[in-house]
Length: 487
Ligand SMILES: Nc1ncnc2c1ncn2[C@@H]1O[C@H](COP(=O)(O)OP(=O)(O)OP(=O)(O)O)[C@@H](O)[C@H]1O
Ligand SMILES: [Mg+2]
Image (tube, rainbow, N blue to C red; front, side, top):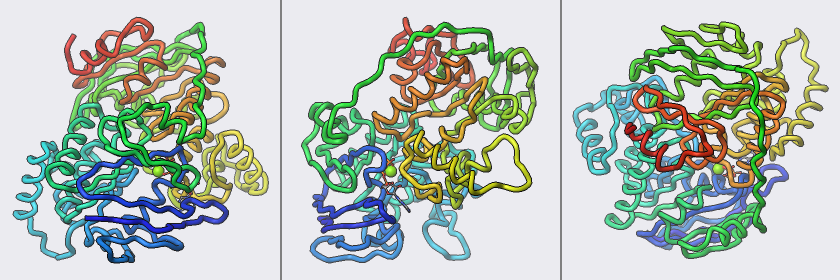
């Protein structure tokens, strides 16, 4: 399959998201698509996969110009895309969700569906519990489900938009092996959109770099990371030194906390995070670290043990009450738990304010919104809808919505989907918060981030928490062993 993009243009108001892009893709190859946040990567891939039309330009498949009016049409021509934020229907179970995406017959043929699902999941050694409902699946499992659906749908050309953000190293290896199989054994073409240069180096044969809506380079990989970074930003960003900070009084304390859930029970959690401390939680996805964060945010309940904030017992307090008490929380699912699609930046700001006055002063909200946009360098306008922002800009907006003075910030994958420069920027914001005494508890599937950014680390495995490690003296190997459940 030979695909060519000719002079693709897509503007959103004043933003030239795609500004005359020409590209050619050959079958059986794995391409990396790189570019800083807002460069136009997702826009281009959504055009290619029929999710949105270009303003002008052509998609040519094997010499034939195409016009797609929906992703289903593009999939009919062999192009399938795994979106940055998975678009599932949460309440259905795996089998139904899978069937819904395929045909619209009223009577669902469970037997055939099951056989197809089984064949593909075993070929790629995916592990999906077919009876589980979608909301109970981890991000990695949802992705595998989505990928399965695309393959059954006949995809020859697969676009993966940041597929490894939020999944574990183990799931990533599985995914990469499947991708290699698809390209090398089955001749499919793969485009991997990613901010992780090492992944592009590991998996791809060629990298294409977008900057401000234009293609600025193509290079065979592996090559040096510096070469890629320079093409992405036009310069090599400098990384700030990690500031040294003396930690203070205990802010968050967990004593013998137990959280039972349908899938996993987290037990014997004893943990203290002090003022100004950055505490990192490592572990494979679904090992319990996320449940601990959610319990501290008031989103799941512990049935044993005690959670306290600055000495006060806050066990079983509601999310709203905890917010008012000074706990800020940023969830992994930006558009599911954090931001609301269809609401503007200004509306988000108004909704996130501590107290709701009866009358909203929209003029001043608009001003505040402009100020936050500038301060947090969000590429957008006060009236931009949250779902129109690029992934990186959504994350910046979430940070812009955190209240000014907080005792504790809880974060799931704080730099998920961010380019190198934006990740550093987020951590500078967090360092500034800790310098004013805020305690920070975060989880991440990026081991380097855990080790580089934390003061102390705990590793989760099957609902159990390891001994607490000092980030300065531990190593990737030690953390890796604990993640695998070894001592
Ligand atoms: N539906 C839309 N309406 C308005 N603006 C949009 C829309 N979609 C994208 N944009 C804007 O177009 C630009 C490119 O966005 P895009 O999502 O393609 O970037 P990206 O390269 O995927 O970035 P990231 O790495 O952050 O995901 C951004 O400035 C974004 O705000
Ligand atoms: Mg994107």
